[in-house]
Image (tube, rainbow, N blue to C red; front, side):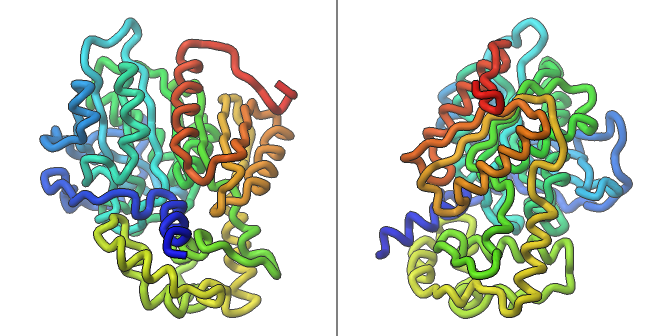
Length: 394
C-alpha cells in the first residue's frame, strides 16, 4: 500500500521529487508585482540578474553558467504587468552562426508558494533533468518559475495565458542575459508545463519578434474538467492535485470557499501533502494513506459545476496554431486520463494544427522516457527536419 502511495505522490507533477534546500543567494528581491503591462522591448526586460554560485552537477559537468533572473511579463488578462523569476543557463563555448538557439522549459506542478520556485534549488526541483540534455547540445535554456512563485503575489494556477506569457518572456529575458543568443526557440514542458508550452504555441501574437520552431507537451494538462463530471470518481493522484485546483479556482473567483472541495485528511494534512520538497516526505506518504474519496469530493452540486466550468475555461486547445506540436501521453497515467488528452488533440487536429501525437502504453505521468523523446524532437525542429503530422495519418 505504501509503495502505491509513494508512486501516486510522484505522479502529481514534480511533487516530492527532490530533497534540496533553497539556494539563499538566488532568493528574489521584494519587488512590485502589479505594474502597467509591458509593451515591446519591456517584455522580458530584466529587473535583476545574478550568477548562481551553487549549481547542479550536470550544469558544472557541461561547463555551463546559471544566472538567476527576475524579468517583466504580463498577467493572464493582459491588462497588468508582472515580475517573474527564473534561471537562464548559458552553454560552454562560442555561439553558432545566427546565435545560440533557446529552449524555454516549463516545469510541472511544484506548488503555488514562493518556496516552490524551482530557481531556488540547484536541481530546479527535478527539472534539471530536462535542462541538461539541451546544455549538452549547446543551447541556451530558460526556466520560468511562473507568476507568483518566487515573486510577490499569488500564482494563477493553470491560467494558460499567464503561463504562455511567462514562457515566452523567459526567452526574451534569456536574450537580454545572452546577447549572442538568436531568435529561434523551442519550448518543452511536462504536466502543468505541458499546458504552458502548448498555450505559448497558440500565442504567436504575443511571441512576435521570436521564431518558435515547436512545442513539446509531455503529459500535458489540457482538460481536467472530466475529473468533476457527475458520478466520476478520482484516483489518488487526482485527489492529491485537488488542493492546487482549488488554488487556481480561487485566484479567478476569490469568493469560493476551500471547504467546498477539500476536507478531512486532505485539509488536516495540507502542509505535508502540498510541500514542494521531500523534506516532509515521510509525513506526506503517511498522510496520503489516510485520504478517503470524500476528502476531495465537491460538497454540493453547485460546487461541482463551478469547478468543472472553470476547468473548461482554462482548457486547451483554444485557437489554432501553425507551430508544430509534440504531444506524448502515458498509457498508465493515473493523473490525466489518456483519453482526455486524445480528445484535446482531436480538437486541435480539427482546427488544422500540426500535431505529432504519441501514446506510450507502458509509461505513466511525466515519464523521463518522454523527456528523451521531447529532446530528440526539438533537435529535429532546430535542424529543419520534416515534422510527422499524425492529424493527417502521418
